[in-house]
Length: 271
Ligand SMILES: Nc1ncnc2c1ncn2[C@@H]1O[C@H](COP(=O)(O)OP(=O)(O)OP(=O)(O)O)[C@@H](O)[C@H]1O
Image 1 (tube, protein in one colour):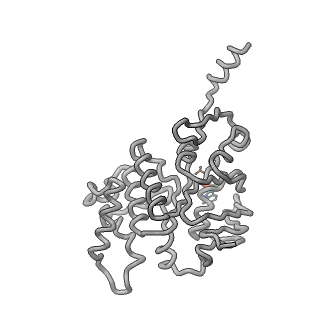
Image 2 (image 1 turned 45 degrees about the horizontal axis):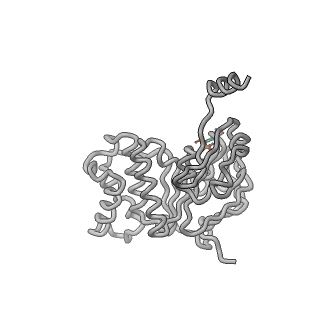
Image 3 (image 1 turned 30 degrees about the horizontal axis):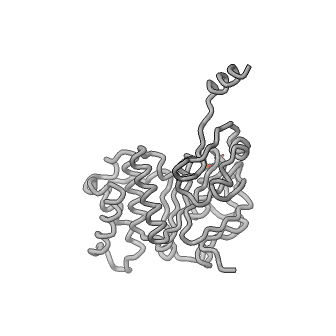
């Protein structure tokens, strides 16, 4: 059997009051994957474990057959980029912030960016719609603009694997679609492998080939959106009833929320 592109084996990490355990996950090269699950189920904890922001308690993570913790920071950053849930902003211009994505490619005494670095950074700034803000300070951007700059920086790293923690949480619907379409295009055309935490089950369904559902610090189930986004699974994990249908255009599952008012009105009309 060929070695998986990205593999998590029997992985465990966490904090004194919360432990993620027994995580096994394997991503194919060029796949688009979503991590879903209720608040506090462990999605960000897994991210922090993968990126070594917190210590591994058990298990291994490997990328292209190499254990992640045996790669140097530079080697890792050339292959894997991360967009965290909260953007770390500083008194730095948007252009300089995005250009930091080129650092893993700089030689020891290379202090200035090359023409290519600028071209790559400007291209991703254009595609994420932040080029027009290039001379502003990161602190002068709105939350959504900062999020897009963080995505531009991660893409400027030209990684093979892109990890994103709720990349659309601050974005309006136009930019949600624009960013996810961009990731989808890079995934299709350049084989970028994507693993993103996403709360919106309909976006997850529409864009991801595979979904990984977390519940209470464990991987509850994984599979295609059709396999994971079923009425029973959602009710069990999210503890709320939903209506599931199929999008007639994409054939992907669509979830409708059920409010208390809807439940009462339905019960009243049935009695
Ligand atoms: N720094 C920390 N120290 C201790 N416990 C933490 C810390 N960060 C998170 N936790 C706990 O770990 C659990 C999982 O948190 P995590 O952030 O992984 O959830 P999540 O699935 O990403 O949730 P959300 O959807 O709300 O972002 C939660 O119960 C949380 O309180």
